[in-house]
Amino acid sequence: MSDAPHAILTIGGKERRFRFDMNAVADFQGVTGIKLTELDTLEEKVNENVGVLTALIWAGIFQYDDKLTVRSVGRMFTYDEVENLNETVWAHVAAALGSKKGKKATRATPKKTTLDNRGRGSSPSKNPQT
Image 1: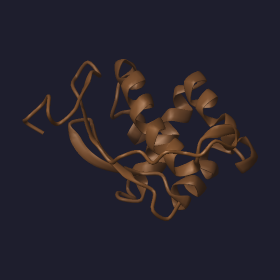
Image 2: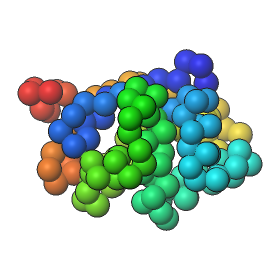
Image 3: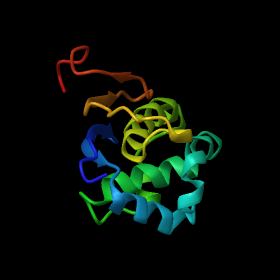
Image 4: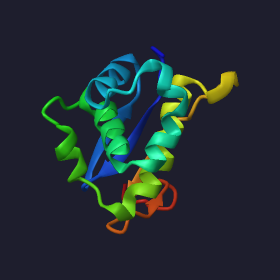
């Protein structure tokens, strides 16, 4: 996981680097209590509980801004943005952890994702202002 890719997420109008490496795993586990043995069901937990997604995002961006809290990250996005954030963040987490059930993981290519005020994402080619 030392070469875990990173993504650029625009959350709350600010670009933030997101990287899910071993430090992020440790931080995430510290705030959620999710054990290593439960990481294979992490995608289900994220889909069922927006608090898990918030903690996941926090863990991935905290290493670049250690003043952030899980609650402050939760204030950066709205429910309308959850689906797009979940998709983007999960691609990088799955690549870092490896896919479930022993399948070989494919590395996510670092990409820039911009969310508008309604949580709709666009790639840099579709949104030249980013």
